[in-house]
Image (cartoon, rainbow, N blue to C red; front, side, top):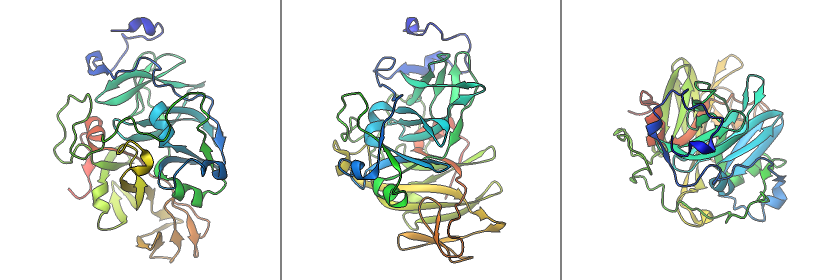
Amino acid sequence: MPGAAQWPKTNFEKRNVDLGEIVSGGPPKDGIPALDAAQFVGIPKADAWLDEKEPVIAVSLGDDTKAYPLQILIWHEIVNDTVGEVPVSVTFCPLCNSCIAFDRRVGDRILDFGTTGRLRKSDMVMYDRQTQSWWQQLIGEAIVGELTGTVLKTVPADIVSYGQFKRAFPAGKVLSRDTGYLRNYGTNPYRGYDSITDRPFLFYDNVDPRLAPMERVINVRAGPEHRIYPFSAFEGTPVINDDFNGEALVLFSRHGTHSVLDTGQISDGRFVRSVTAYSRALQGKTLTFVAVGERFVDNETGSTWDLFGRAISGPLTGQRLVSADSGVHFAFAWLAFNPNSSIYGK
């Protein structure tokens, strides 16, 4: 294995992929530095440098809610943190536009993750510092080393605009630019990468012909099955009520979040959608939703809901929908690892 001297603890004999599929992405091990001692600020301080339309990853566990601006994650890709007493790794692979947060507990260990500098199918390959096993970010599975075959549990994480986040969670915390690293936060080193017809970087598989490779999609898992919803499916309606593999689902969308991968300055990027996914089963009822202005209303009780699945007025005020197991990605990346996924509308 080229560069194996950097990995004295990695057992390359134990793996479930062909090592030839793993290629250098350019930077060396930890050349894209993960954040391990993240600092956070309140909304008033973040307002000074974070545009309302810029994308953030929102993670809420218990009473703890945090926003991780993509203008920072695009330079670091991994934040090892704790939210609501749960040790998590919040990850973002720019090449796949893939936002996933993981519970980093495996057995009695709490793992810390870093970047290997390598890619497989254009997706980031992470490593844990405890065993130096290598992990595929998009599926959360160890693919090389002692922990091969172990799959991390995901925690709900959504890409939304900072403005949407701060209005919903005025007491929320925002990842600070005070990272200990000198980076040009607010700029995009992958300028123009999300053009919908582009060819993915260092991707050698055949592209699934059912969707344009750089189409944004949100995947939802129901049992062992996956369905993806292209963002273009929301052009006619901001709400999709669906039934998939025995689960009643609702997907909410809002337009008006800057793409982190468009222009050199993120705050100038074109607008794309924020999409969130939930179970629409609540208190023994199956709700159906419609969009009314900037909010969503269920037909059964007339309660009003926000993008984060919270009832903010009406009979169900204070209730919250259960997040679906979901994540946002580019279509090529999701389908490369999950080719049997169904596609909504096809």
